[in-house]
Image 1 (cartoon, rainbow, N blue to C red):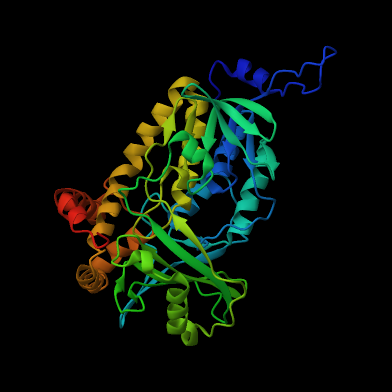
Image 2: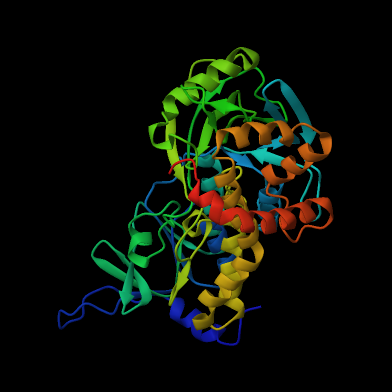
Length: 434
């Protein structure tokens, strides 16, 4: 239901003419109620939800339709639920029923648990297909899509009042930053990564495999670098169901020697480890790397909010953020419709904090802990050593547990939050990268 000011908002949604007047002056800037910078899952979710509720929304995506996004392509059960909330049909995605975890010689294969309200299945959907489908749905819902156009925030004092696209300005009641890892727009708004917090690096490619239709993701939790140092991260193979698998590795910045870590060599080492078992063909494209932001200094301000990766909403324990991007995008759209615009940034920050901050904070502290090789080796043996602990590890890897989760999973996370909070000063002083 659109708030009472809806009539004013719909009227304001009509773009004003940009033709020159007889006097030669340029008409006022074009105006949209909601402007989204970035057309990934987070930005598209905002547009789908907002347009469906009658908001005049424009998405600026600097890439072209079908552009790729470097990613593991995995969708957790949490992401599947969010996509279902958006009305997204997953028939083109490859269904995934669980996760196979490897730690040295220990292998545990488990199905997703189906913890309410999340389904007992995930999916693999290459981002060039997923992102395009979401943007198509946004356009179908009534959003305006502007492909191939980069947008930068326009400020008046400390307030964002719109975006600049080339030599023209588009004003907006609210600007949503959904441009992924921090870039020029984030720097302008002070929404950069917190330099005192960890981040991740990952690399991936695709290869053909006769096992492409399997319904379990595979994650190897015991990686080592060239010197034999344990790497806090994991290697993965995600079957895509289209003749190929997504294969990659990721590492956290808290490991000893992180700055010297060669991702290409780590990828080659992992590929050699699993290549025969998965009967991998040659790489179908050059392995490509990307950075995983896991924090931000600011995620809102007057006239703007940051969502998804741009808000640092990435699980430090698995590098996953699509589900949080979808949820944060839908949240800001609903708040925009249901509350006065001026209150949306603060309301959004409070709601995001209540949903995710404790879990993500615990994950960042945990990453400092496992940055110490001997703790990492011991911890990995424990993580898959018993069925009960392995099931909790599965919930964490699937973004299915946080401090509000009922049962053992929630109790363990609350205990971990308190314990790691007490240990945090020591962990930071003795961090492996110091």
